[in-house]
Image (cartoon, helix red, strand yellow):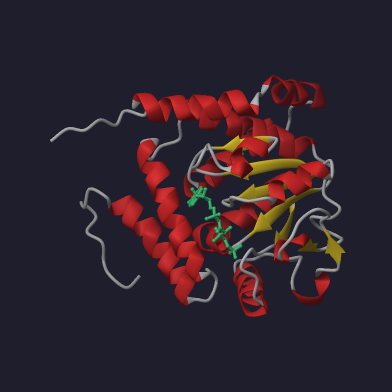
Length: 255
Ligand code: PTJ
C-alpha cells in the first residue's frame, strides 16, 4: 500500500479497495482502463449503500445453486477481478469445482501471464486461457475475448463473469450457456442479459457466495433446481433500481 489510510476515515473501506486496484495496476494485472471501470463501480456502490442488499443476497444464493448444479462451470477472470479477489477466486474454484480461465477485454500476453502467475502464486493449480491455449472461438463476438480455451469457456455450461459490461454475455447466452454476472450497474448489458446478475461489489460477493455453496452442498438437485427456477433476473434488476431510486439503500442527503 502506497499510503496509509487512517482506520477511522469515513471512507476507509472504499479507499482500501481503490488501493487494491492501484496495487494491481502497478503489479501489471490491471489495465489502465480498469481503473476507470472501478470508478464507475464505486458510483453505483455508493448508490446501493455499499452493502449487500436483500436482492443481491437472493441472487448470490441462486448463483450458488446454479454453480452446484452445473456440469462444467468456469470462472472467467479479468484484471480487476484478479486484483480485488485473488485468494477468493481460488477458494471459489475449490468450493464450486469451477475451473479458472483468464479472459481479457484489453488483451495483452504480458498481462494474461501476470494474472496466471499471480493466481498460481496464491495456490491455483491450473489457469486456462493463456497464450496458445486460446484456440476455440465464441461465435458472434468481436474483439479479443472471443478467443477462449477449448477446455474452459468453450466447453462450459455455466460461465461466471464478474465485473464487465459488454457483448460477451449475449454471445455466451447465444451459445446456450448460462451466465452468472456480478455488476454494480443494474442497467448494464451484462446485467440484463445474464441468466443471473448479482448487483453488488465483487469484494463483498465472493466470500458470501463461497459460504453459501458450502452450506448448499448437501442439498439435493431438486431443491437447488427449485431455487433456480424461482429466480427472475429482470425482476431482481428492477428491484436494485428501485432501491437506488427511492434511496431504499438508506442513503439520503444529510449534513
Ligand atoms: O482486464 P480486462 O482487460 O478484461 O478489462 C476489465 C474491464 C473491467 C476494464 C473491462 O471489462 C471494462 O472496460 O469493463 P466496463 O465496460 O467498464 O464495465 C465494468 C462494469 O463493472 C461496470 O458496469 C461497473 O459498474 C462494474 N464494476 C466496477 N467495479 C466493480 C463492478 N462491479 C462489481 N464490483 C466491482 N468492484
